[in-house]
Image 1 (cartoon, helix red, strand yellow):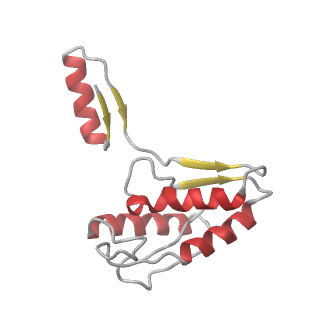
Image 2: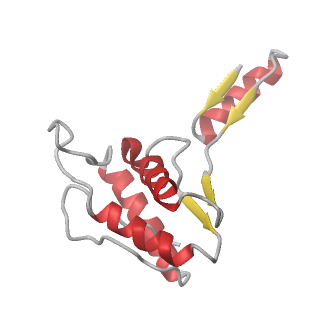
Image 3: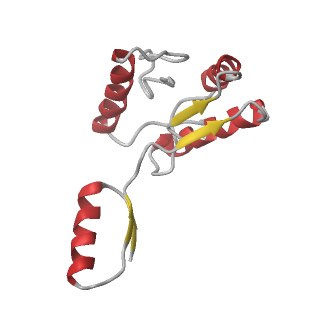
Length: 143
């Protein structure tokens, strides 16, 4: 049995698997880091980072929600990332020109905003975005 999803369901699946002596593997999410070294093609790495976090508004278990950047490329990478994220067309997910639509619920929106506030409270930087838009209140990446 294999399962990818949230922790509460994963616990139940492991319990049932153990009771029935069924091999099981669970992947219960994580922060899916993207690691970028100085020898990387920075433009391609930025494109990958944008695609990784923006696919399905980042609401997938493999969303690249963290970046580990080598100090030699850190500033240049973030500058390009901020420009790319700021240029995305945010809007109605039913419109063809929309590149990033809305989050699934108010609860998920509040969760995302709380992560941003947590990062800011821990002294993390802010490179793009803000609460100024109603469909998607943040384009930010916090590190």
